[in-house]
Image (cartoon, rainbow, N blue to C red; front, side, top):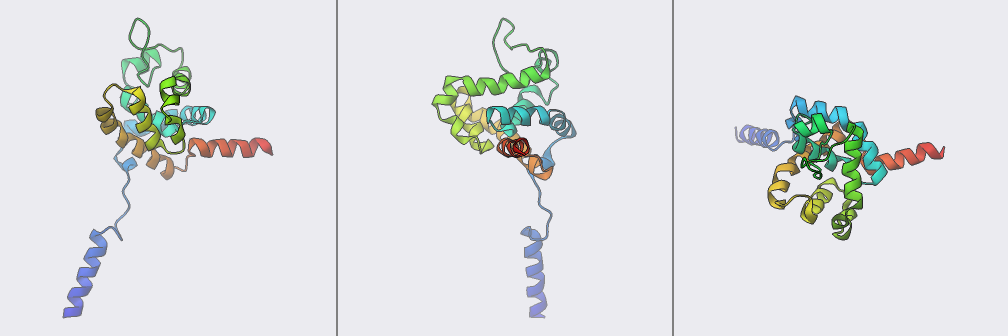
Length: 181
């Protein structure tokens, strides 16, 4: 009888401790709209991430948050998914979605606040890169913005892993290997 109780306790501990439970991820918490957004723009994000050596996962997470996964006025009418400001209207206007996405990467790559703050040192870590650019001035309320967007960065990373998408660095290596042949 004692051994049976011990066995039941061990089985319950394994089940409740996650040993036999399916692994959950942040990506599983993504809505259908957010998944559709990632699927629609991942090629643009990955390509620009590789071009500028900036984590596409961070760009995607910011775009999900800033544009309401592509449903905001700025995303629909201005092709501005990242809340890039400027001009009389408050937000920049771009001719195409591709132009809007590339402007985001170019902004991070060229702005002195990001380069001088060493944010670019974290290009291989989307989470650290995200926090570094926010603290370097991407948003005037860093703590609030990090708390709101960090879960999206994690979800996009999980989505990337679950769908075997490359990181920006992985895409650079893959592209270099293919073009060298």
